[in-house]
Length: 297
Length: 334
Image 1: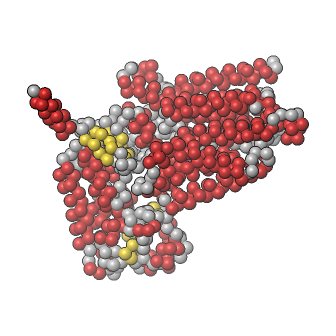
Image 2: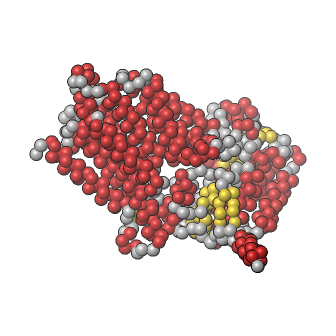
Image 3: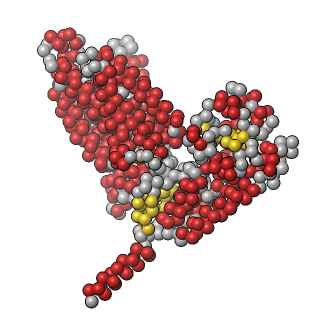
């Protein structure tokens, strides 16, 4: 009789566990328990917002940070400050059952202290994007197979972009500027990883860290074949000493991305494949500068 | 009306302003003014008022009081109206602590467990205290005021440079660092209040005990010495008060500008009295100033929130400039 009871209790417990609580490992290697599928989500990082939406939970977002702007649907979601200066009171007032935030912000600590469930995730590399996708999927109680499928389709998209590259476009030396300070994307960043897969040579080695601040002279000395940068960098690039003599500037082997495209490129999230496509298009054009600039494959 | 009762009146008034501002703070919400007594008693509004707005306002008052007290102690100790709480390098030490913490955390893999447990607040506090100790080491104790000042400035510059270097080598910490430098009361909770309150009580009591040494110091070091006040031990304790008060405030709110500098000046412009009273007045003034600035930071551009450090710098700096300009004929800022 006692044995039977023990079995019943054990099975009940197993059933409860399987049906409900999920434990997700965050960036601090801490276990975050999420008892049931969250219905009210606040996201404080654009790439996490995009991940939530890609996993089909866009309508469950009740608050996003002021930089989240994709997909279109999140523009109507209430803003709750930025990742670094989240408005604690607005977030609590929204009564979220899950808050997604980047690495270490004081805001995240405060929200946790107020009794909210906070999941800290910050993707910087391809592997991170996969890990974050899995973690968010788990947290949303999305079947693992679906997160996996999403990751496979991102991978396939990146692969397609890599294959769209013409043979003569490969092997170019590239400088990717993330912000006009100037910060560049090295081989260690997810942008650099995509470029490496495309067979490009990044002038910034992995040893410099993912997004190092760059000495303008370093770029002049390295003489990249192609310079990739956002629209905001274009004006200042011409004025940097010695840059007018850069071969890439001379021959217009430049990829200047619009603000929206730059957003797509610098966010390590589900739009990575689209970013890869943007880079491939530009690299193909740069390899063949004689062709009119409007041609796109 | 004599100075004594005048000081007492100001004390009462400033305390009242402080209490009123803290209460006002509970009605200053993310969407502008929002009276909690009309909002109804559901659990969420209750949590917002009791766990967010109240500790935040109270914490701003406590932190402002600590900075005001530290400023008054610094100006008395160094006999210099330009002295502020961050003089002995505690500000740059706190920034460096935060910088190291963030860069270690950014690295993720080799972030040590105890260092993680320390948190951003602990890192800032440890940094501030270590910086002051370094200053004391360089100045070989507290005997010589000028050497202490110089060592403080040098430590401030050097640690500031190291912090810049860290944020250059690890760009991902730069933004978070900037948030810390501006100073904000947004993340102050009850746990912060619980540490700030006893620190304030302790610092106030210690400063009170040695207030008459500061009075003697206004006559010059030599005279103070001849008056037989325990100058050496007083200096040591007052430097301790200065670094503890500043470290605690900075750790919880970041670098809030000008409160520590402006509060003692404001007090001096209101009333001339002994240090025993002016220290208390400076603390009350600092508290009222920062609590007021905190409420303004929340409602001025609601729902967008200003970092409170920006507001105190604009208001405090503007006020000081005005005093200098107005007072140039009549004795100037003292």
